[in-house]
Image (tube, rainbow over all chains, first blue to last red; front, side, top):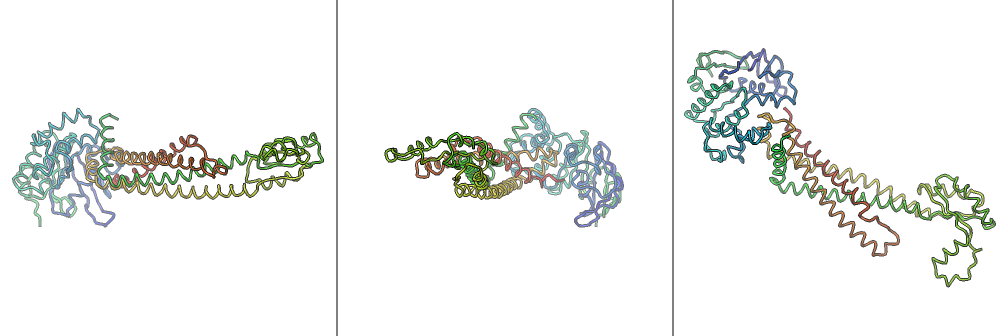
Length: 230
Length: 294
């Protein structure tokens, strides 16, 4: 669950005003597209939600954590409630598919038996059964992104944040990936997908939040129509 | 902490050492070299102190009693001598004993007809602090009944000067070398964090605690520091034993006495491993600090 009230964000280093008073509520179990041109503030919102940057003013609550007052040492606990997926996958090249996913469990303290039980289940869920021993470089882009999804999913986060997850994929793979995310959402995980791919967003009838110049300009179920880039 | 977790952390620490082996080798070598230099100077200071201590114990100050005094009168001076500041003890030696000591030192046949009356009764003075020998000598000369005081002032002074210089040089060297080892260690672990920066970023993203992220790098530093210190200890041992053999067998034996290695072994081992561990842990944790912000 995410609650943002009048969030303003000014980057100290450059003085850039990235967000001018954003209000956004995402409820548990929702599937939300966040759309907008580059530089509109989408990435800033993700960074605020994961605690990588701190807002200049306003109120932000993520999965029960007060992001305006969270202590540095509590950040890992917030991050365990989130799964993050990036455009460039961010897999560890020298680890197999299985190890990439198991790694995420290991570093949060899962036991070997928990890992042995959970990882194959998640890999099957994302359609990578039989690919466990492969290395990322031996996989297609779509498959690599599935590994990243499995990794994000393996610690059973309450919410998955996907930052341009289809940015490096062709349209067919993109659609497949989005269907996978939809399936994960149906299993109970909240999904926030940041993208600027209009066709993809309109292929699903989901809530679409449009942002431009650091402000939310539309928020509703009527797809990408209300929002025109360029 | 679960065993599997601990095993994982230790394994990743060791993986780091081998993943950039040349840098690890350099770190071990530099740590070792710094420790050997530190240890050698430390041992030098210890031995000089030991020699000074034995000088203080040996009969360096001899207080001759006026020959007009009888043995009993000479013995009566003892409390006066012991009352002098910096005197820790005084042993009375009669002129007869002095003569036999003298004859023992040289060829008895030459001095067979020697008469004890040419010797004076005397006190062998033990000093608390050898560096105050000069003022103690002057004070002893003022005691009634004392005819003359023999003290190897220059000998004592030279030793004290050497000790002071060596102590200062050693201390400065130890501080400099400690900083050097820390710097090298820090750099190596920084390299380790750099080669694994993606892993660290992912660890942070999925919510690994800072302690967990830090651990492999501290283990790496610890292991490198320990290997360096144990190697240094072995080499220091060999060098010191070699030196002792040289001294014992050579002409210097009469002038220099060295402590046996067994007397300095444990303090040296503890100091080396202690410094190795501190350099490793401090170097390691300072290198990873930048990655743990945010």
